[in-house]
Amino acid sequence: MLPEYLSQVKKLVLKKIHISIGNSNLIEDVMSYSALADSKMIRAGLVFASSETNNNLHKESVTTLAAAVELMHTYSLIHDDLPCMDDDDLRRNQPSTHIKYGEANAVLAGDALQALAYEIISEDIHLDSNEKVHSIKTLSKACGKNGMVYGQFLDIENENNQNIDQNMLDEIHNLKTGKLIECSVMLGLIGGDLKKEEIDFFEVFSKQIGLAFQITDDILDITQSEEVLGKNKNSDIKNSKITYIDILGLDAAKNKAKELIVLAIEAMNAFDIQGRDRLMDIAKYLVSRQN
Amino acid sequence: MLPEYLSQVKKLVLKKIHISIGNSNLIEDVMSYSALADSKMIRAGLVFASSETNNNLHKESVTTLAAAVELMHTYSLIHDDLPCMDDDDLRRNQPSTHIKYGEANAVLAGDALQALAYEIISEDIHLDSNEKVHSIKTLSKACGKNGMVYGQFLDIENENNQNIDQNMLDEIHNLKTGKLIECSVMLGLIGGDLKKEEIDFFEVFSKQIGLAFQITDDILDITQSEEVLGKNKNSDIKNSKITYIDILGLDAAKNKAKELIVLAIEAMNAFDIQGRDRLMDIAKYLVSRQN
Image (cartoon, rainbow over all chains, first blue to last red; front, top):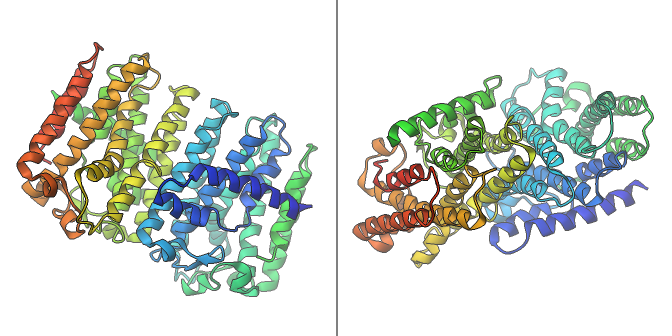
């Protein structure tokens, strides 16, 4: 079952993150505070699920790549929560890093988490150098100036912009959320035997679930409590950000998310590959989750 | 002559940074603002100088590695200048990035510059995969939780601590400034033929010049104008940070910097390697510079 699967992934990845951060100095404490806090581990789950189609990747390397993606995700959350960005004081069911340790330490912990993501890939003992370079290239592109960071830039840039349309919103979230989700799926395929045209279907799948994930986030933000979400509700309203609910309305947004998952699963069904079922389970979970 | 050498390095590295950042979106403008501003390019110069002892590294790869180090240095300056850190509003003879573009964009530009440093190494066309992994491991370790970021953490943590002694100050600056300087020298040796015991001397050399560089920074802060420095004077006093001048006094600090350079040059003279002269020239320049 998927919950057990994700719980097993979480156990492996948190152990790897715990060992990788260590606890020999105080900045490591700040890094661990959010990186080891309770989280859904969806991106790590995608790395593992994607790797089920790939017999060439050692389980420990899957864990390394999944941990790298989660370190990157955690750094982005810490920086996004800063007062100068989204100014959110609750994250992963606890005070945000800058509330607990101050802004300077939050900036620095995020910076060090990003460096650590590349470091642990470079030090993995089963990946060969080509696979490491491929992984690092994929991760750095997904998270940089044409990926996650640019998405957050556009998101902040468009605060108070009431003229934003669905295409623009899709672009922002494809970058801000979708790129790292796509990267997670791609990292699970590292070193594998898939042909280019097969990998293309994984990309189509990733893009659909990335958007569906974000639309579901917007839905949950207005239908769930802060306690269930573990983070601030109405952060977008506070920051005058347009959401999918503003553009589509609640019911159409729910339908849109479901349609995207149908398209994602169609993409995965376009060819016959062993082990793809787990990815499809996660796709369905992304729109049925409660937090 | 060294000024011409550094000027040539600067030309190559700025061109590489310019191409790597690009100018297709607005976050790239924010990144370029500080990354392309006038700077001393000392770290890039060290990568080039160190590579003069290494015949195996293609000149374009030296440029890539030097650009990666400068991107990393620039990101650290942008983040260190933030109001929640050192709160400096002048850098590289222009308003700091957060003054020009706001705090959120400064955080994001720094984040993207860090990602780009790894990305350009992963995409270099002359380095082989082993060399890329070695370079990325070296860079991520130098800049992470046991390197540059930890140094900045300790630096901020010890604001208002009047009991700081020279050992503690040495530790902070070995981490904050020294690790990236050492990394620059090490990157110039990537793929080379030196034996472990020879590389050890480059390490000793790097540690001495790293400290000498920082002591000279403290000296220049009280002996030069903001116009010559291109950054805020008295930033340490404002932030109640102890400097080498506080602990040693001006004359002893000058002597200490010179002694460290003598030790650095002794380390480089301990063996006979072609091409080491340029590194020694930079070592001498580090303590004789005027900004």
